[in-house]
Amino acid sequence: MLFSPSRIRYYGNYMMKWNGTREIPGLALTAARYGMAEHMAQRVRADEPIVAQLATFVAADIADGAILRKFDADTPARRLADGVVDHLSVARVGFEVGNTHPKAKPYIGILAVRAALVGGANLLHLIKTGEVTKGRANQKATNLAMAAFALVATNGNAKATHITGTIASAIAIITAIPHFRDIGTTHSRGMREL
Image 1 (spheres, rainbow, N blue to C red):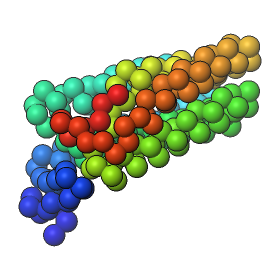
Image 2 (image 1 turned 135 degrees about the vertical axis):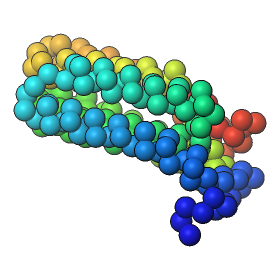
Image 3 (image 1 turned 60 degrees about the horizontal axis):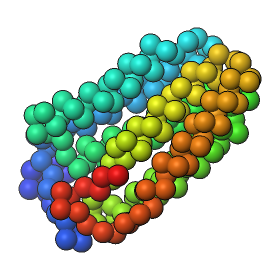
């Protein structure tokens, strides 16, 4: 039975127990953010501003985890889903920004490579230890830099796009480095925090 409360998965020394009553609300709250990203992508394609939508997305990203932690309902599966939704959302909106504003493509490429490498490192750590990685300040800095870049790029100013693209790329590269440290090392809290 897929949603059996007694379903248990083992990862090395770490055990993740499936509790549908606890997991489903958090997973649904987190997954709903992808719909917001799709809406932003459609607005980019239609050459409409995304400032309000992006601000709402960032607020929802911060709020879903904070709300779930407040009620002790944040789980490893939800934290993993959070990272997946973040990466899929960035990829979806980035794809439309690149298609609509070709001057942004080189920077979107750099950010995509960074996302793939960091995602791979975090996945390797998860496979080895069962621990989800939370980027904390490193990932927040990258996400905010990418959001600023997307807003500037959608305005069509080539010079501003190059400047913010360079800054976002530099921040993304610098903040990627911690993701490659201590892969495979277990942590007392059952989560790798950078």
